[in-house]
Image (cartoon, rainbow, N blue to C red; front, top):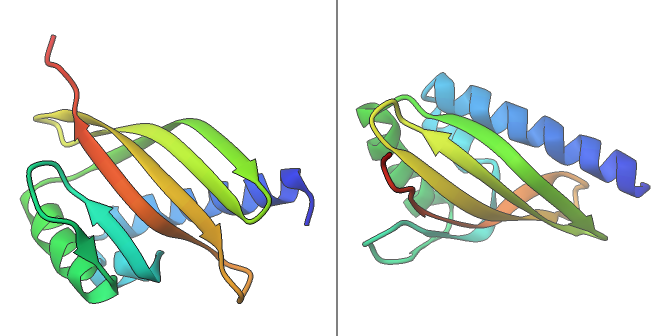
Length: 120
């Protein structure tokens, strides 16, 4: 898989993740993460593993509708990072995620961290 193919595969996963979040498919959202993924929400403890991540996203998505916009995507072998912005309609945040290409060939989120952007 060359770098263009890797980039296209990750971009597809990004779109599918956004679609699952929009459907409020909590189990589906958690499935985009590696088994031992970490989520680092602002002002909260680190969450580890898909079950904790599913529970987090269930609570987060029940309260709001999120949109995601990738502003940068860099791929290096079987690892990539994505920088972007998200909007709940009430607040905006910036995020950084690390993607890993798993043994099954699928790209999954491995680390996810974000914080709020200043209001203008």
